[in-house]
Amino acid sequence: MLKFASIGRKTAGAFARPLAALAGVPARAFAVQSVASAESLSKILKAEESKTIVIDWYADWCGPCRQFAPTFDKMSNDPAFPPTSHLFLKANVEEVDAESLPGFPAINAVPTFHVIKAGKIKSLSGANEAALLSAIKA
Image (cartoon, rainbow, N blue to C red; front, side):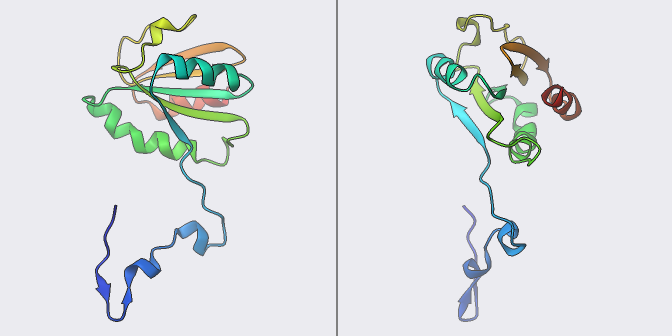
């Protein structure tokens, strides 16, 4: 959490409103949800099957995963991918076993992204923003 120094009698915290609110646009929290287990992922996939689901498979020790995380967060907040039709998830490969889910391809590298539309899974390996955007929009 950011801490602000005092500015005279006012604290900077009073000025720390989101830029979107200052522009008159309601702020939207990042829409990425963390998945803790294969069972919870399975339940989410069944409950949200009408949406385009994008899963970021990552590992805590993976440098490219950490570098791409802000980009993935930004994508999840993009108005082109509203939460009514898109769902962005993050799953740690050391905690969630993708291979235990029926029909899921193996994760051989991180980061790996799965884009699920109408029950079909497209798998992308590597932190390639253009390829991921293209797969989501396709």
